Image (cartoon, rainbow, N blue to C red):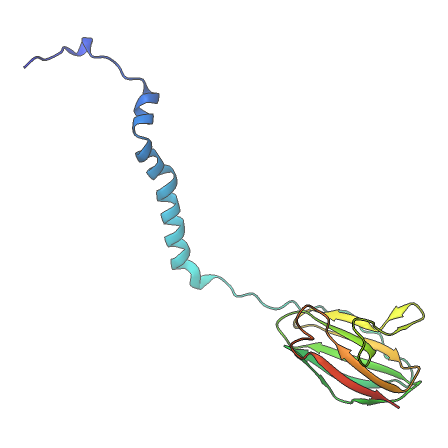
Length: 168
């Protein structure tokens, strides 16, 4: 057995040692932190606060003088309207609450129309309301007839989100 004296041993450059131990470095630099982060995240997941709906609060203008106020609720995928027979030539305020978990549109159209909101003086009879929020739409129907309130967000109307109203 031959022993090489220490002064004759070849020195290995540090980069070669590190390169030879790539797997060890990978394990220490990437895998171990990933495991700790994942485990810590799973253990601490109970302390993550749940999201609360954002309620938009704004001062609401009073309804037009002599307006009929109609309470309306939207949810998945329906409208609940307190009154479906409305007067012609009299202001109507639709107070609209979105009780659903997703955004909905409130569009007033002639019965059978497809995404053609009523228009008057440059205004359209439509609004969108985010979940948990409320809003309103003021409208005066100029003509008697059959109308519909509809949500045109993709798939909502097809799921039955339409209500019929009569203006007399």
